[in-house]
Image (cartoon, rainbow over all chains, first blue to last red; front, side, top):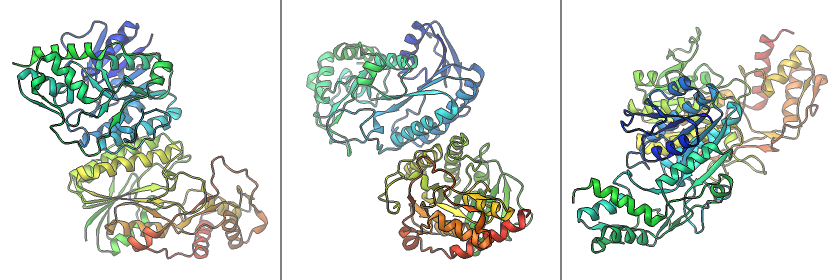
Length: 301
Length: 301
């Protein structure tokens, strides 16, 4: 049992990481830039802080033993957002302050955009080449290399949860699953790019639980946070349309492919399963059904 | 003619970059952490600032059109100094502030330690793999990738002077040339590692002039700042010993090789010569002679 600090705690993944950390018996502290949720989880102490402005203060004050750093810019388009640069700076300062306050283990989060996209087969943390092509991927990759190189001098352990594609309640509407879901619920056509592309989708509750498990593990280095499954986007979209009951409004392939979009982005999840000991619990059909239900409550039909 | 800001201006390279920038007619501003030199070069306006604490203030105030960023940690051992992490943060913040203040072209400085060491032949900016193995090299490499990826969004040009081995007056005494020189002048034995290693040594005055030329050029990306020549360390040491007149005290090969030390570290200087239009002016024999003379004035014999 440790004192654990979670940043980005009110974001998309954050709430799903807090619950398993509380259930594991940790003293859980959560940081959010905005005011903490009124209906927050029992057992979590909330702190309001702007990590971009003052990244060191909250860790210096709390002296947590473990850190789960989820905060990063999320405003679309994240791929080219100059805020990525500020998050490199803030993350490095946060990790230094965490170590200076006596912290022992920091879990940070990366992205499948760190890998060199292209080719077939799944992405493996140890063998697949890293060659990010976007500011987002480059900023995350740069952060990881510096943190890992400094970990010895800082006398901390570090792990890096490399997150693939997520879905679930609360996702930004500009992302694929919410865009299709909300459009169909509104009775509008849902147009997608090529349906043959395969993407590794994990339910956000599983992503939170996997990262909480990584906080508790002693694995170091990068670990893919993913399902290991790569449904075609066509199948994913059709499943959503069936749940909503509006197959008639789905137009797969109506949009052109985006330049640089690879055929397959699927994770090898051997490390997550065998070394962290985590397996996803939410089946895609169930996860999509509850996501659709969540959107039905929020979208006027 | 532009307003040019030089950071690290009172360091080893800095003074040698200021003069050619003044001679080119620029309005030259220099930043140093300590008090500006009393015998400073005419035409240079000095500013005292701690870039680690407040990286943005001096650029926000001056709004320079061009930036030559030389400041970085220099305390030995720089390879593992945790200050490297702070310099990543400070450099990114500095570049963002430079762009926000309307800056047009930023020249930053890297290191031959960004390259994957090993193998024969010279290191080429476009083809040689980058795989830094030290915190210093990793921090510099990470900085470069983020700055280059952000340059488009920041609407600035960037170039990256990748500095190899330097020598000349004012170098830290823990480095090879000063260590040998000072020991021999004191009449003490000078012990070195294996003499067969080849290193690309450039006189610091040439390094400063090369970086000043890069500020004035429109070349983007990495440019090796080096001589293109790779004398054996034995020959270098023997040349120093002859100048001092103490061949008898030189013990080449008395120290074991350092792990990971490659046989050859020599730059391909095609870009520097053909694209920047710069060629070194200081011959090794002359440069060593004036370096020895500089140390004679400072070392009690």
